[in-house]
Length: 97
Image 1 (spheres, helix red, strand yellow):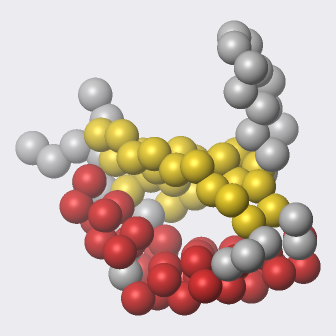
Image 2 (image 1 turned 90 degrees about the vertical axis):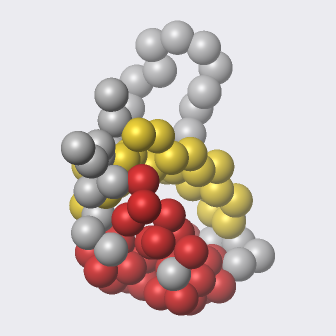
């Protein structure tokens, strides 16, 4: 039985205008590899700890393999290139329980 996979991203950017192209390209790549956005820059509340993401993104993929294919894809490489030099991302990938 395959398990869903979730990608959690803390996205920080110094140039919101350049991020428009990144988001456009990333959205295409996410859809191509079967992913979907669950949270994308929505308001959040920190309940414990000090984590304060600038822009929180949560994606769901059919499984870990699909998420890794997305991340390693030429489509997402183009998106990463579009944000190069103006953003810092922390990303993690977790398999559903």
